[in-house]
Image 1 (spheres, rainbow, N blue to C red):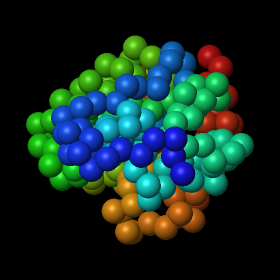
Image 2: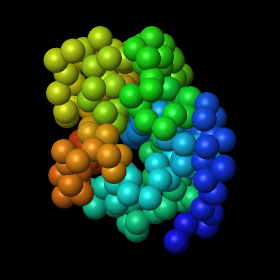
Image 3: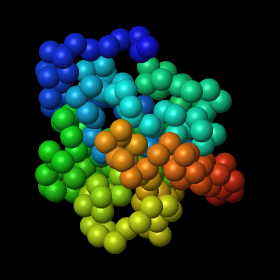
Image 4: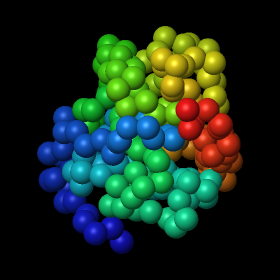
Length: 190
């Protein structure tokens, strides 16, 4: 059970709120959600809605030694991982975001990557990535595009419980490929 469960009124009142980044310079991986959902914004922690597979996927892929909860999110920094969002505005669903918001979010994300220089930036949602970065044929996995000379781009599926195309085993396998790349990358120490 989470340390805090918001009321229905608190969830409804979270429209338009944001969730603070979990970020530091020189991370191995900066995970990028599409935007906060209302439950997440109501509690103020990333990927907080019950049923979201982000935290179980991180653990199953090897990023964390134990299954973290959204309330443990700052522990990621100790291991070289962080979280941000493409768009900061909380909505009931990512479908409520405009293409303009996604494109503007992509620009902000590029600025953030240039400032913090994570080794990998993992966008969690291929459709959002395609829209934000004008890459209509982008697929999952490592992309040939980079942000500056420091940040490789990786695209993973959206871990929302609404994404029925993937099961936890699929997420674990796809996240594991990124984990292995981040652990084995010799250019990270440059």
